[in-house]
Length: 230
Image (cartoon, helix red, strand yellow):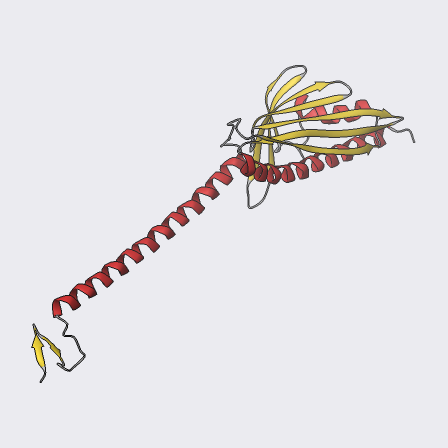
C-alpha cells in the first residue's frame, strides 16, 4: 500500500527505496546554493573583465597623451627608427632654417598647433610636439632640440609614450640641393610587452617623421624656387 513519510507520498514496492522529505529539501538546497555561487562567479568575472577593459583604455589614452610614462629601466628593448633619406631641391642653409624656424622663431601657421616652445636658448630649446593619432587622440611629447648649424639637429625625448627616444637630422650639400638623412632609436620597458608597445609607437612615430620631412621639403623647395633668378 502507499505509505506516507513526513508528507511525502512514496510507493512501497520491491526495489524502491523510500526517500525522506528532509533529504529532498537538503538536495534542493544544495542545488540552489550551487546555482547562486555560479551566478556570483559569472558576475564577478564579467565585472573584472569590464574593469580591465576600462583600465586598459584609460592607460592607453594616458600613455599616448604623454600623461603616463612607464620608465622602469627593466627589460628595456631598443629598436631603430629609420633610416629615412630624402633629396631636397634647396640649399642646405635654407633647409636648416626651415627646420629651425618653428623653434628659434615663430612657427608657420601649419605648425603652430603642433609645436610649442617651452624654453629657448641659442642652440637648444625645450618643446612640446602634438601629433594627431586617431579617434580624436593627440600624442604629446616633450623633447630637447639641439642645433648644430648648418649640418645637424638632435632630438631627445623627455616625456612621451615610451621612456627613451633619440633622433637626429643630418644635412649634406649636394650641389644646389640638400641630402637629408634621419635616424634614431626608441626604447620601451618590460620585455615582450615593451617590444609590442615599442613597435606600435614606432609605427606611428615613423608616420609622423615622414610627414614632417614632407612638410620641410615642401616649404624649403617653395622658398628656393622663389629665390631662383628668372
